[in-house]
Image (cartoon, rainbow, N blue to C red):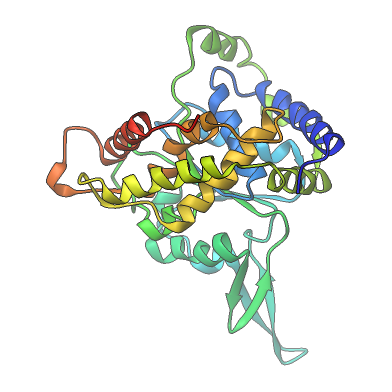
Length: 320
C-alpha cells in the first residue's frame, strides 16, 4: 500500500512545524532532534545517554510540551518503587473492594529521568509497559494510552549509585542517541537565550490525531526487497562478529525497519534509500549488542559497540 501524496504532504508539513518548535529550544544538536522525531513516528521509545548539562532532559521535555497530549515526568531514584511508576490498588472501605490508582506511566509521553538511578526491580516495572503498551497489577491488565512513548535519560559517566540497564531493558528502546556538545555558534545562542525558559514558552503544535497520522503514513513508506536484504545482512554481521558476544535480535531488525520508514517520511519521501539504514544502524543497533570481554579496549563498552557497528556498516555492500 503506497502513501497517498496528500497524506505524505500533510504529515510532512505538521512534522516541520513540530521540528521548528523544538529547534527554538534545542540548539546545535539537529541530529538528536531528528532522531527523537523518528522514534515518535516509529511508535518507539528513546534513550538519551550523555554527560550532564547537554540538554537530555530539555529535549525530552520540549518534545512532550510540543505535543497536545498527556505528559508525566518521573525522577528515578534508588528508593523509587514499582508502584510509584505503574500505580497501586488501594482498599476502599465503603465499597469493600480495591480501587486501582494509576501511576504516571498512564500518559502519552513518560519522561523517565536518570533511569539508571533506580533499582532493577523498579526498572523492570517498565518492561511490560514498553513492549505491550499495558501494565498488570493484582492480576488485572490495564491498557496504556495510545500513543505511548517512554523517553529515558541517563548519565554514562557517573557510576556511584547507579544500576546499569540490563540487555532486556535496553532492547525495548528503539534507539539510543547522544546529544553531544553544541558547536561554537550553538552554544552562543544558548548563552544569549539563557535569560528565558524556552521550554516553558513552548505551546502544543501537534495533536494525538496528527501523531496517529504520522505513524500511519510511516507504515506505508515503501521498502524495496534489496533494502530488506541489506538490512538483514547488517543484522547477520552483528551475530557473526567475533568481537560481539551478543548480536542484534529480531526486535532490533524490526526497529531498524520501522525507523528507516519514519526517517524517509521525515525527509518527505514515500520510499526508503540505503542511507536511511546506514544513518540509523548505530543508534538502533549499538545498545542491543554486547561486546565480548575478550576484546575489551580502553573505550567504554557503549563506545566500542558503536565503533563495531559503524565498521560493519562501512564494510557491508550497499545495494545499487
